[in-house]
Length: 503
Image (cartoon, rainbow, N blue to C red; front, top):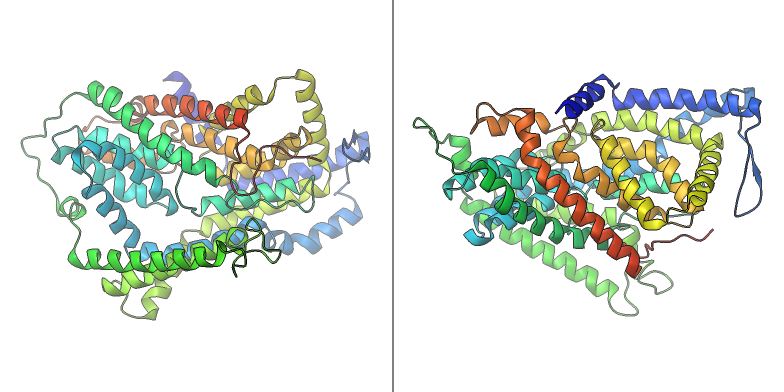
């Protein structure tokens, strides 16, 4: 507890992530001048070219900064793809479709599969922004109490799926194009033409979904519930109206989900019709499936799929009465990205300065040489990277903010060692996920405490951490074992996403 308390104090003392990026951008400028004056150098292992720092504090450097400040921001890869994806998901979320899907999945599950379905629903809810935290966690507590089980165990299972399973899913969400964009920017420090698709980790994500659901179920039923013991509600307990509404699905919601399902099936059928035949119109211009616009433009697919199904659901349930309501829903999703846009502005400047100065290349070459000299081997190296990402996550909650700092350093370094950006990204995502549920810096941590206090007025940070620690340890062990198996068998992480990179 002393260690966790120290981490909490340290995390609270950190500046806002946007401020951190502004400071890092200034630091990159200063180091570019220092490195130039001290004549830092590194030899590129692929071309034998001597890499030296570019002084951005020179006259030419200042001109470049002033001229490119706007384009650094507007051309930053993750910005556009996240905005477009969120427009479609915003329609689905504001229509109530995603909430209704989660309720339907949980409420219709057999009792013996209840825990598994709750954890699985938590993983699947990651496709939207906060639905899992705001809807599923309290709903799981209500469902468990109705089933005469401890409600905090139900909330723990849901929280484990939503937050601990953040890097798993059966469908792509906003985090996938966001991280892929950051990875691509970092990879282009070494290879100017490298492309990281949003589907980069898709195969690994699918396998992780069922692993997390099974592991979360086992921990809930074998560790957490026995530790909590039986639950007796207070004599004056009365279910409020909001809790009662969570346990029901209206006839209109059922109808909306039915028609949304028909639209989804039609879109999937159209995609398969265009991709499966050898001359399909959705294959690449060279006829290759891996160069299909569906894979390369998956953000467009996300926008159309969630946008159309959300429209159908919203008009059927009367949540949308006209086009103005739809546009308001899309506008609300943009409001939630306000702070993200501020963060991206400073992150884009930092990444651009880091690349222009050649500091990224020099650090990557020196770091790769040091790691190769240490001769750790791929598997121990990746496990250490998981631990590093998980430790940093205890002090800095935002997945994108951490990756924007770490990717420009570690992706080029691992590329020089022969490991792909897709592998670096998936290893980072494991570390980022496994400590989410025990990190006081996680943005919804306070909300989880508030939910638990409904059933245990004395619940606090220690309660949540003690309850969630078994999940964190189990997910770490299972994911590491799965990663080792993936590496040993050389399995692809996603479509056209291998483990290794050749200079």
